[in-house]
Image (cartoon, rainbow, N blue to C red; front, side, top):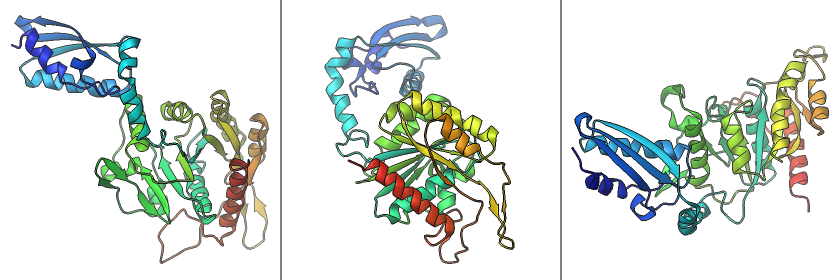
Amino acid sequence: MLSKEEIQELLNSVNDPFLHKTLGETDGVKSISIKEDKKHVSVKVGIAKTNTAEQMDLQQEIVALLKKNGVSTVGLRFEQLPDEVIQKFQPSAEAEKEKSLLGVSKQPNFIAIASGKGGVGKSTVTVNLAMSLMRLGKKVGIIDADIYGFSVPDMMGIENRPQVRGEKIIPVERFGIQVISMGFFVEDNSPIIWRGPMLGKMLNSFFKEVEWGDLDYLLLDLPPGTGDIAMDVHELIPSAKEVIVSTPHPSAAFVAARAGQMAIKTEHEILGVIENMAYYESKKTGEKEYVFGKGGGQKLADALETKVLAHLPLQQPYEDEDEFAPSVYQEDHPLGKEYHKMASKIVAKMEEA
């Protein structure tokens, strides 16, 4: 069985995930107690931030380290380090932030695409808005932050996977757009069974560990609703603007209002509402059938004190044998033209003096 001194020495080499200093340097090992008969060790550790995904990773690291060295069971508690200790080592943490997309002096324009529920075409809107911004000459990236329901790679016909250069992940480029998605890191479309803090860490790494280059716009395809990822985005990017997607059905609009209210409460400006699947126009008669009801988009816009950016009909992209991208509307497609108008409005709004 290890002695207290040996346990202390082992733990002193472990890094605080936020300050990037060892627990020995921060005096982070606060107490150690041993039950010899049961080979049980209890440890209290001080770190810069508690109740985070990084704490969960650190917990696993410490438990694995002690068990590897002969401990049977480990009891682990965390507390926050004193403010003066955190401030002492803060410069190195700030320097780490500078490596992140959120720390660079010239940040892109962030646009979050949100909805109240799934199945309303939020990812389709994200992909085609990105395409239209690119066609306007903008440098564009997409973060597929819908971690449980990632679909952007399939929609854009992406078959490659990101490459790693040094310590950075190189996003996949398709149609001149940089794309990163949870889908790139999951084998065989496996289900994601993660807790909220782990999801937050993945989102963080999409900013910190990806080599985005010089972007004009970064679009975030959010999960539906107002869960952990949406909350993390609101905290990480206070400057983000939002587009709310809904169908015209009153119930869908009612649910979408929650996502809009969350944006308002966190001071994210809402650029507007997109009413998707607004109607189906018969090729034979030219008549419009309002398959999913009528009026929900305007009702939602009124509730959020914003405007409807577009009423988009149900239409498929043109078939293209040369380019497989099942959800990308061509530039000359009627919906491609609608997205072009929307993108022009958004650019004018976001880049106005």
